[in-house]
Length: 346
Image 1 (cartoon, rainbow, N blue to C red):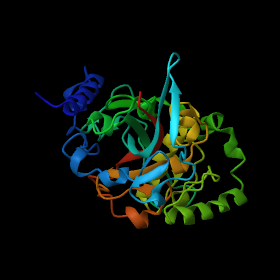
Image 2 (tube, rainbow, N blue to C red):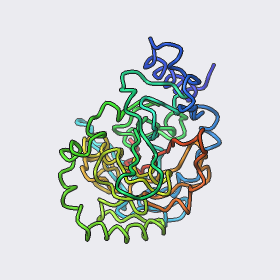
Image 3 (cartoon, rainbow, N blue to C red):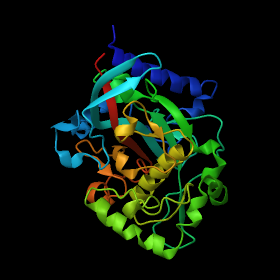
Image 4 (cartoon, rainbow, N blue to C red):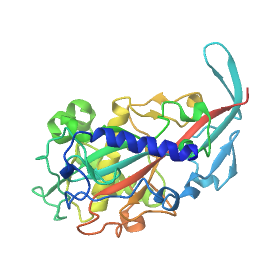
């Protein structure tokens, strides 16, 4: 009999199969040379994930494993906690750690899913083709990528760690959460303004110059939450669309647009703040994403198997070489989220 974590993964694969039910054989991997199989749901879940990146682990406000330098600012410092389920108050101790949270993939071909084996998802406009740009840095050279978000609570799927409060608001297995192809605000900058009207306030030259400080801080492995409109050396977070000025590094473009996808989730209440003493009993709605709450690691085409990085860290440090021409020009990232929660004792 298969262990439960393998049954969870098999269940996620079944969901993907249902999404493509009724499609012709041409919709499957191999029918399009520009939609590659990322081989994500394979043994790479064991070999290509940075398991050491779960550390540091805090218990009762004290770091018990790993270096305390990896604890984000604002993390819970209380020793004990108590959560009310509406009837009974459950006492416990606070726990904090980095957890794999979601998988974000950025692709050029609408509906292409490397995470699901290179299948073509139904119900999207096949003509809305993206481009990675040519890196000439002029106004006529823009990149455009679609993004897909998948639930990926791998610690729960593999039964490595389980506490209801630590997985509050998170699906129990692998599943599709969002496809940008069905979101017109991702395609048109003008429509994205209605999602984020504050983008007009941070479009000034002084605001953009401030992003130099964010890039410098990210290079050192830290995040400046105050500069919420900056994604370090990757570029500006606004507009919340798939359009970005073509850069020398396609890996930077992919990282930037995956970050924008996270920001969109926060703006729409699909992601919550999970860092701080006030959220140990469940995440809190936060329309402005805290960058320090997240880290990323590339899973495909070339995995970061021994490390992850903060939002905005230069690709010269971790990933300029993690793109394969022709067969690996899209990208798949594991999103790591710091979670402060209450480990209930009763």
